[in-house]
Image 1 (tube, protein in one colour):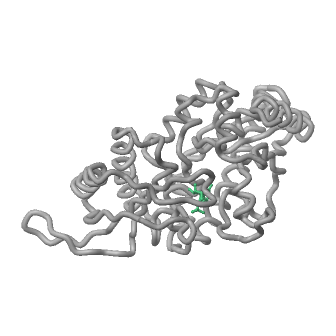
Image 2 (image 1 turned 135 degrees about the vertical axis):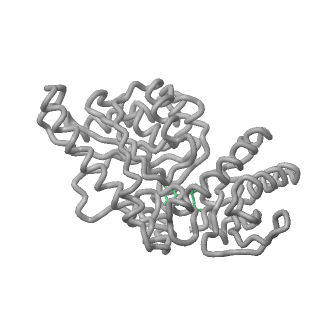
Image 3 (image 1 turned 90 degrees about the horizontal axis):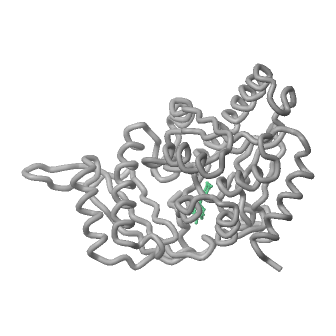
Length: 331
Ligand code: XMP
């Protein structure tokens, strides 16, 4: 019988068996998957777990704060926040191929976790805390069933994108993976999260990809472009929430076409800016999706605000492609 309770009981037992008394780290992204995975591991092995939140600079507005505040308050996990914005910008400079970006981001993530693991061990020596001296052997990943399939690990076996942290890991990974959500779909993960007491704002959150805004800038990633996209994305999210549409939408990527320019007019002047794409989709599990028929007046407000408030953007376009043939993200 599938119930959240049964899943939790099974996974807690499996995690304990796998991990023993070793130390574990979990990369927290603020999203549903990593939060629920972390809460499960916390339930299983408590203080052996340290969560690491990597601020890679590819985050949306307010995300660091949400993890630092809400998730820690609800679960009491040990959390380390690392500001690695410059490191990711440097590593990504000059790259615009989507799969290359994913690989770089995945690789840098792992390097940061390795650094964090070293620091955690060093610190526990100083304070002689539980498990002191033992290495960090395990890394928790919030991999879901559809991620396994789409990355070529399941029966589907088609490598559509190397995403979801499955295909992007380096060969010389020094951690063993703990993947307690590997057999679950998103709605099941949410049910498990609620049962574990993960806050509703996190459990109900729309999906956001691990590589973040890095795969929503078509073209090279720069600090300025990230700032532009972050502003546009925040406006779109604010207006969708205000219109009460969050539950109708699976997610709504906002994509900056950084390599495209279009002519516009503002006041008396000609502008030569960039378009952003709104990509609202409805879906059950992200394997297939349809574009969400948003009300025109909401689209209109979003468009007006973005073009008024984000100076580099002079055009807002709507993506009306289903998946397939489009994917949800543009990269
Ligand atoms: P696509 O674009 O493949 O997206 O239709 C399906 C779902 O996966 C998310 N996505 C990712 N998640 N790392 C992630 O953790 C990635 O590289 C990645 N690429 C896409 C996407 O947001 C959607 O929910």
